[in-house]
Structures are given as C-alpha cells and as structure tokens.
Image 1: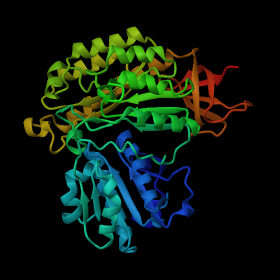
Image 2 (image 1 turned 90 degrees about the vertical axis):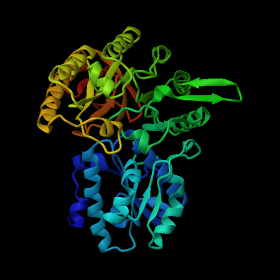
Image 3 (image 1 turned 30 degrees about the horizontal axis):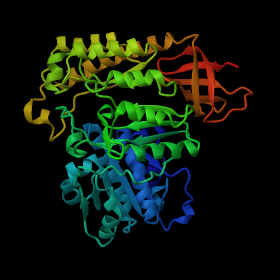
Length: 474
C-alpha cells in the first residue's frame, strides 16, 4: 500500500483504529511527534490518553499524520480474532513506511502485547517495542532502548498499578464528553475472555483521584463523564483516613454530586455484581444517566455455565425486571455471543427469547471466536461450524434490529433532555446529542443560539432503527 493510500483511509475504516491528537495541546512545543491508533474497548481508548500524557512529558507531541511521526503506536485488542488481524495488517503497512524512514519506531501497546510479544518482535519483526497495559510508565526508557536498535519489551502485569496520579491528555476530544478509568483488570474468569490474562487482576483506583479528575474536567467545560472498568460494579476502595469503604454506588453518588449539570455514565456492569444500591443511587440523581450496559452473552443456563458467567438465565432476567421496577425508563443494552462451544439450536433460541424478554435498545453481537490462552480453549472443543455461527448471529442481529426499532417507536411524541455534543455527521444544519438513555437524537439548529455542551429539550417526531429525530421545544 502506498503512503498516500494509507493517508486516505475512509472514516469507516478508521473507527476501530482511530488516530488521535490532543484537542488542547500546542504541537509546536514538542521536538518529536507520536502517532497513535486505538482498537477495541473504551478502556483502550482511555489508556491511549494516559500514554499521551506520559509521552507529552518526554517531549513528544501527538500528530494525526503518521508521516510526521518519530514514533507510531498501536494500542491493541485481543478480544476477537478479527481485531488482531486488523492490527497485523496495519503493522505491515507501517513497516513498509519504515523502509523509507529508518529512524521511525513502531510499537504495540495493550492486550496483544503480552500474548504475541515474541512473534511480533522476533518472528515477524513488525515492531521495535512491545508494552503491556500495566507498563506504560516505562515507555520513555523503552523508547531510549529501541532508539539504540535493541528490541524493547515490558509486559509485566501489576497488582497495584492504576495510573491514578497521571492526568490523561484528552485525545481528539469534543470538549464535552470524557472517560474516567476507575479500575483496572478483571477477576471474572469468563471462559471465552482473555482480559484477566492480558490486563491482570482487578484493582480499584482511589476515590479521591477519581473525584479530582471529574472536578477538573467539569471546570474545563466538560459536561459528561463515563466511569470505566471491566466490571465497574465490583469497584471497592477503602478510605483509611475516614475508615470508610467506598463501593461503586457510593463512588457513583460522589461523582454525581460534583455538579447537577455534569452527566455521569458508566460501563461495563457484570450482571452478578450490579446491586439495588446502585440502581437506587441512579434513580435518586437526575444527572446519573438511565442507561445500563448489561451483557448476557447467552440466554441459556447450560451455556452460561460453560462460559463461567456465574448466573443463570432466570437470575439474569430477574435482574432486568428489577432494573425496570426501580427505573422504568432505564435503557438496557447487551453483549451477545453466537455459537459458543456445544451450543444447540434450542439453546440458541433461548438467547433469542431472552433478548425478546429484555427488550434491549441495542446490542454488541458477535459469533464465537476462540482466543488462545483462554479457559475455553483449554477445556472445550470449538465445535460449531462457522456457517452455523454466522447464521445464528444473523438471526440475533435480526431480532435486535426489530427490538431497536420498536424501542425507538415507543419514544415518538416524547420529550427528552439532550446534551448537545456537536454537529450531525450528515448535516451542519443539525445538532447531534444523546438523551439519558444513551439514544442518539438528531434535531435542526434553526435560529437558536446554542453550542455543544448546552442542554435542550427535544421532542421526538420520527425515528430510524438507530436514531431518534426531533425538534427543540422552547
């Protein structure tokens, strides 16, 4: 691929490998440039902001043009095989660029780093440095090492690293919404998942640093924060000064009290850990968004047991009932895997019926992709043919498309408080924003004097499967 072709990547191609530059930094103050692409979950995008802060302190400024960069980094994901294939392809492209720019350093960060360090460094010779999720503080030293021609590696996992003292550089931010990482790692050994092996054991960041970050963001004009963790509901931190245990419900309330005009979201919740205390806290504060991402993965109890999800179908559906009971207007989304090991047609239909019962507003849907190193790889045979996986996934998608459209149709005629995030992607004459339930709403600007960060009341007049369409109500 030619350099100009690389520069001309389409918007859709860039979404899972978004290149970022700080929205607030003066690029002329730095002697060197770094270019970073992030793949996968929101946590990876948040980690890239930590990396940017570390590099800024070492004299590196971000650039959107990799041809200007002295350092190219890919923050990677190992959750699905397709993500790894995408990263490998991208590394091969950058390696070709390096042939005409020998001083360029190429590095891999994140979840692929630990798992594929030997292949990436020695067998395929695609990268110069490999840095795991808990080793970003060592980046300056590793860059110096790589500049001498040595291969630089640090993929050690930590039991206490939370990067709590690092102020993230908000990459390519709209200045309205931001992520705050509240914990790292995961203790849930779901059999299909690599996260416990690539990100280590669960540890919670101290509450004071989280609140300080939220307050700083609000003082700089941000109007929405999303609290991030692999399983936010298991957040647990002891304030030794006050001899107080801070649970996720208490942390959520503390962040909400920063200001009634600061919206608070969170992701992701594990069904076994979300408590009534969290739900009542959400219901008590208008600025905590009425939206929960509650992955089910499968609607069949036997399959859930194979996945080591530690709940049954009935338990999950009862949790959905409890959410609706406490917050009837709460939006719910999910993650769903089609074709897990030994799944039968009847068990697949259980997933479809669980979706119908839960009435998800949207879902992230995939067919099972066996990941090396997981419990499922060691314990089970990946015995569902790919054509059956794909057919089951298509049936899941069709059900979700129907549910999404039904959910949006129920909102016709309703009025929602919407946070304006920016221009609609399709028209500069329309605003784009989201309501508390995390639904996208598009509405005309008309002659109102408004700007991103403002709240407006919007009445829904029309909808598509994915978007609400409305107008501002005086």
